[in-house]
Image (tube, rainbow, N blue to C red):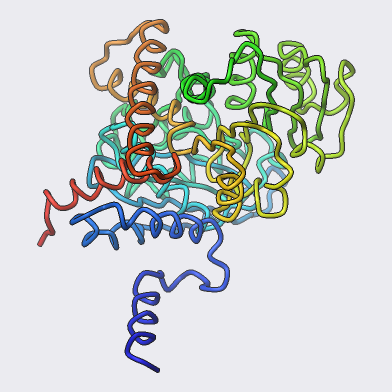
Length: 436
């Protein structure tokens, strides 16, 4: 082996945690590619870039519970803290049957980038349990949540790592997590999680915050490319707290939502879907399936719908090299985390389609989580109008700075966001130094 090849092999081995499969890196592999793309723009800070390529701490826990029928069941849980140079870890907890360590690692890293991009005093973290929560009773779900919280309790806390809702978790899950942690600590610790019920120290506006953030940066991006939102046609994948809220806000400004896809199927109406009626239908039936006031499309046709704005707000790796060339939108706003693969990113860029990346587009949720955390510490709570105004201001300022960096370096918005965020993270790392 030549010296060059040996050096490359050593470097590759050095940056890859031994507990991952080099042939199937999954979402973590996507994140590593994104870091490689931003490295040339980091200047002298690039000497610290290896910091970004490995999580600070990854905890895998067994979560045993007794089921309602008296039998025992074991589930695999994770909590990953990617980076805490700028503050305590911050990131959601998801319950999903396909959760993997690679996925949680990538999500924690994207949280590091996201928090730094909007200049919040947080690092990045993420958690999950490999379970289909739909097959559990309410009692089983509570026991699962409490046991998981107890298992990860050694690394979370209001000044260490603050979980929040994510896929298939909600205010109730956060209430159980807060109570469990508090009981183990012997004192109420409302700041250990965000996204809690209002009655337990939650923040007004938190439930709608991620969707509102998607809408806000969408408005800003549309102005830059000369797209009139009031005449825009929009397609949305995922119709929960992110996609559903974003669709509602866009529709309220005059935009036409023509297609929506979720786990139940795809509905379409060229003249525009009745978004409030569709939201009500989803609330009652669990998905968009069988919505009478629209036609049903095969799921694969969703990506080829003739629209101006496409909002993927479901799960990772939805826009890939196999469907990116079908997309007709002028702009993609990533409401989900990691919905576009690097290969698809390149295809969209070559086709002149603007991608507003997840690490800025869906940062509204963690921004209001920050507000909630601050309010819990001070025991002083703000009005919803004040929270929304603060959210919009932070999102607009962050987007403006990222747009300028993209213009100055002639790079995509994703690379520009990583330039801004990674520079902040690594500057903090450099200033703090290494201990011991």
